Image 1 (cartoon, rainbow, N blue to C red):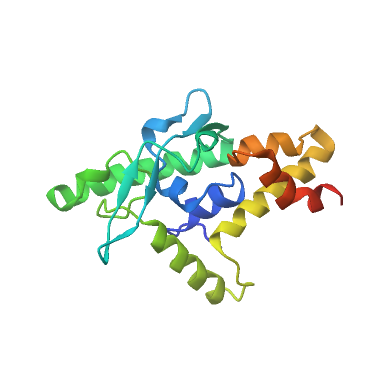
Image 2: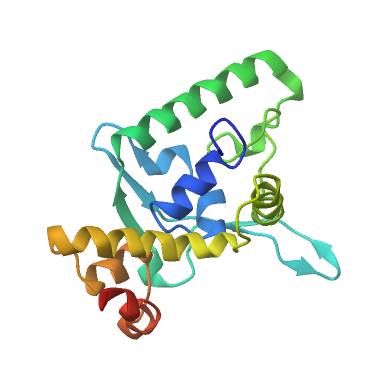
Length: 186
C-alpha cells in the first residue's frame, strides 16, 4: 500500500530492517554500498524543540554506539533505492535553482530536495494507517515487526536473540531479551 508514496522507504526500512525514524531520515547515499550490497547506519536526524522552535539536527551519531551498524542490502530494497536516487536526480535537474541542495546526500527528501523529517513520518504513518483502515500502531512498532520476522526466520536459519540485538542496534542484550523473548518462545 505504501508503494510509490513518501512512506515507502520508511515502511520498508522500519519493517524489514528495524530502523528508527531518526535512522531512516539520516540514511545517506554515501552510506549505501550498492556494489557490495550493504548499508551503514551511521547518521541520524532528529527534530528537537529548542526554545519553542523545532530544529533539524543532523549528526554522525546514533542513539548508542551499538546503534552504529552495517546491514545487508536486499535485492528488492536495492532496486527501490536506485529508483529513488534516479528520481531525485530528475527532480534536481527539473527544478534547478528551486531544488534544495543542502540535503543532496540524503535519501529521504521530497521533490524539491527538502528533508522529510521524523515528525512527518510519524504523522503521515498514522494518517496512512487510518486511510487504509489498518490497525493503528506507532511507526516504532515496525521494529517489532522486524524482530518477529527475524525470529521466525531464525527458526530455520539459526538467527538468535543476540543476532537481533546487533541487527536492531540495542546496546544491551537485556533490552532485546526483555522485549522479544516472548516471541522466541512461540
